[in-house]
Structure formats: C-alpha cells, structure tokens
Amino acid sequence: MASMGAMRSGQTFEGDSVLNKRSIELSYYRGATQLSPTIQSLTLDLFYAINEKNSLQMQLPFKWVKGNLGKTSGLGDISVCYTRNILKSENFDFNASLGLRIPANPSDLNNSYIEYTTDLQSHILPMYYQRSLGSFDLIFGSAFISHFWVLGVGLQIPFNDNKNDFRYEDWKNYPNDEYIHRYDEANFLNRGTDLMFWIERAIYVSRFDFRLGLLPIVRISKDNILDVNLDSESFNQRIKVDGSSGMALTGYVSAAYQLSKSCRFKMFFGYAFKNRDTNPDGMDRENILTVSYRRSF
Image (cartoon, rainbow, N blue to C red):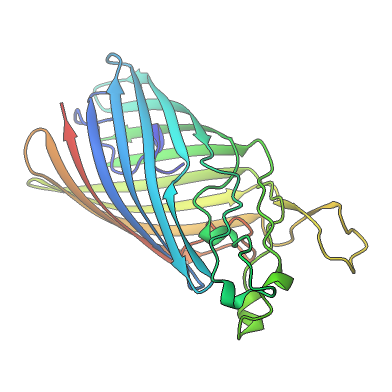
C-alpha cells in the first residue's frame, strides 16, 4: 500500500508527482524479520500519465525468501492503481488513488526443508515465506503534497481468506520447538483492514532530495483464522486472533539523487519502532532497505 499512487514516499510538488510523468522504475527490496526469513524482491513499476490529472501505475514484483524452514521464489502479488489530481494550486497538490492488489497464489507454497518435517514430506510454510498474501485487496489513498511536506492517509481492505495451512505438528523434527511456535498460525487467514497515515519532510540540497518520515499503520479489525487445534472448544470454527489489531509504527529516511532531468536514483531505509504483538500475515519487519532507479519519458 505504501508504494502505490498517491501513497508513495518521495513525491514532490515541483513537477515530479506521479501525475506528471510516464516512467519506469526498477527497485530492489530487502526486509529483515524477527525470525530467520529474509524477504527480497525486484519490482518493476510502470507509470503512465493519461493526462495532467489522471495516471495509472502497475507493480510487477519478483520475490525470493529464505529462512530456516525453507525457501521460495517467483512472482509476487501484482498491484494496479489509478490516481487523480483532485486539487492543484500554486502551493500544493491534493491527489487521490484507487488500487487493487491481485494475489499471485493462495499462500500455500510448501517448498520446505523436509528433514525438519514430521513425516519427511514437504509441508506448507508460514506466511513469512509466502510470495503472496493470498487475497484480493482494495486500496484507497490520498495525499497532500507541498514543497516541503507530504501528508497522507490510506485504507487497505482484504476481500477473501487465503489457503495457508501451516501447522506446528508438521514440524516435529525441527530441533527447536520453541522457534517453530514463534511463527503465528494463519490457517485460512482473513486479514483485518489496515488504516495508514504518514507524514514526510523533504530537505533539498542541490540535486539531492532527502526525506524523513513516520508511517503508522493501524489494523482496525482483528485477523481471523480457522481453529485447527483438536483440543479447542472452537475447533474447525473461525476465530479472531488476539494481538493482531492495533498499530505498527515505522520511521524512515531516504535520499534521492537526480542524475539528469529524466533519471533518478534513490535509497530508502525504514526501521520498525513498534510491531503488533501477533502477526499471522508475516508482514512485520525489523527493518527494510530499498534501492531504486527511475527513468522518465
């Protein structure tokens, strides 16, 4: 959500908003988690300005994940986004976006290390290892963009359950049972709705564009999953996951350099000051790093 349309970090008022350029961007992403998986991706971003007020964006990510339990790689969730300039003045822009996230798979990849599984067969991996969230998501967002400030809000609403069925009992040959239980179960997960706010300050020095920002994401409704615990009174019923709602807070810094009128290089680093207590979707990160190159036409 935080990289789509009006919700993108690094937008500038001086003729470089997503509405004013046809461009292509290639970015590398690396995310570190609280557990062993490291998530990496290469994403191709395509921007097309229909006219001065309307633009389209498409994101095509290739992801690879590796951790103690297995590894996965391939196409990630595809995102498409429409952005419209609602208001334009001499001092600011106000833009709004409508987007759709399309799942690459139902989050049931099972490329596990079989020496750790109970029956020495491949089993479904936790959500951290999945290339897809497994759901269709509708995304709304808007941003106020001035010379030195960007203020925004976004909403992400998932529409369906995924097919993840990671179970603790499938991993009895792993040498550390406590580690296995640090992965939150996400059986047929239906994620809660996310409400995102952000504030960003720009500092310009010659061709450099530095940014400082805060990004709180509030899950306003709890995730719910299918209870697969045979000893539970709610076995085979859908239950809400305690600790899955509330705020996650990330601070970030970025630096962009304008190589020429049409080429831009950017580095971005984010650090999680606060994660939610429970993360069935595997989306929490300790820190993230992105490096991107953008060419406008």
